[in-house]
Image 1: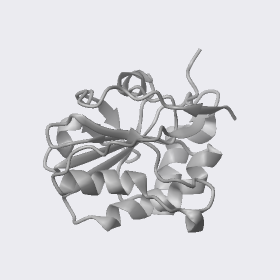
Image 2 (image 1 turned 180 degrees about the vertical axis):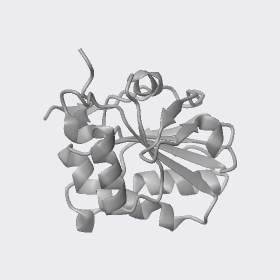
Image 3 (image 1 turned 60 degrees about the horizontal axis):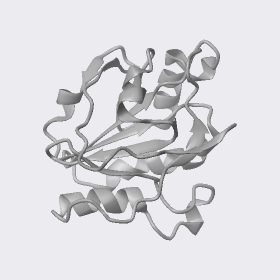
Length: 183
């Protein structure tokens, strides 16, 4: 396990387009989420201990907002040949087991992860109505212990956009395992 922090792209950067299959075999595109004023793109995987520690919080997060206000999408870009637990079949099983309230996409070529500037799992990118980057940071201030969380930074960034306040000024980088890039 290698601990990395995301070096965020500049705020205001447009959301890169994507066309990726989800765990049900449906191809999803950036435009599929156009109706929601806020889009949250989460780079996760199945095996990372950082993701495992926050996964229940990620699954619960969409329930904090009115239906349709925020679109959530999770993407795994790990090399499934060397990390089969992060491949499509295992992803589909995890999505079913945890009852994901968002699509879970597989970025086999890793081009989408590179376009977004994702480097670790979990990694979070929040886009406003115009699909400009408004937040790139961590979920909260305590990845290990949900009971010790004092600041729900991803939640607060989403709420700020919904309230018309724009991007939050203080953004702490995501921290987690490196994306498992193909050789």
